Amino acid sequence: MNDAAAPDLQEGRILEKKRTLRETLNLCREMTWKQRWEYFKDYYLFQTVCIAAAIAVCLLLGWHFLLREDNVSFYVAVLDETLDETKAEELKNALGEELGLDPETIMIDDRFYLAEDGWNKLEIYIKNGQIDVLIADSDDYEELCGYGLMADMTQISDASFQTAYGDQLFYAAGYLESDEVSFEDNETGRGEVKAYGVQAAETDRCWVLRNYQERPVVGIPETAKYPDRSLQCITWLLQEE
Image 1 (cartoon, helix red, strand yellow):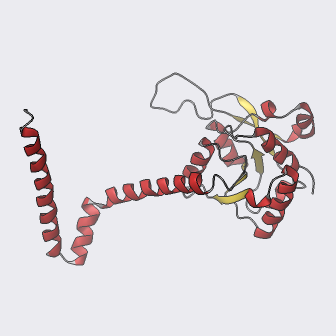
Image 2 (cartoon, rainbow, N blue to C red; image 1 turned 90 degrees about the vertical axis):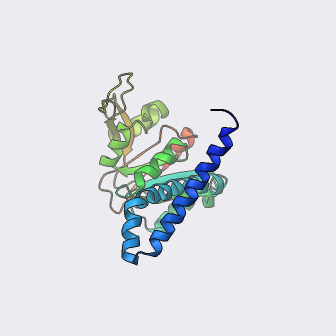
Image 3 (spheres, rainbow, N blue to C red; image 1 turned 180 degrees about the vertical axis):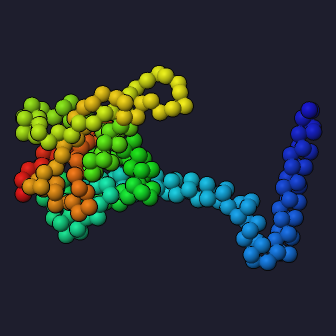
């Protein structure tokens, strides 16, 4: 095809799109509202849902990085739980004093509902290193470990911590790194069993956050930016009230 034909082809495509759009509009004008809905559902609903989902993810990321990045100095994620606002506020103030941070910059977030879009939100936050400490019920926590999202507590903590909380360490299988190419998932939950978290006891400060979690486990995501500070928070949470 020569260069002279290229503009003509492009112009032809534009005219074709305009003609198709005009025909669609004329067709819709002749339809009842019910017929219009059926037409939209058959031809445009799936694309609209996909576009809306993409926009929602972009807005979430934009809000997360542009609006929250400078305002949050420490982030605690609590999964599938509804916190008592008064207790959470008291805990946030005390934690701020312990860590030497402004309590207003500490986020204790219970808006992670795994049955809804909680997994997607959680994965985005963890992979971008925004969560410092995570608290989840043992079954959910074990699944997180299987995806390789949680850090080995024995590699972060010292001997005194392991002596104090050795009986409460939570062991689970991690993610198996493999070069094998397969359509089956042979990596998740197939890795080495390690101490990826610590089980909370009923006398711990951490237990104050529990309303629905039956066996809460607290730990540090693999991507946490300041693991020493995260460990300091966990040590404080595990102390008796």
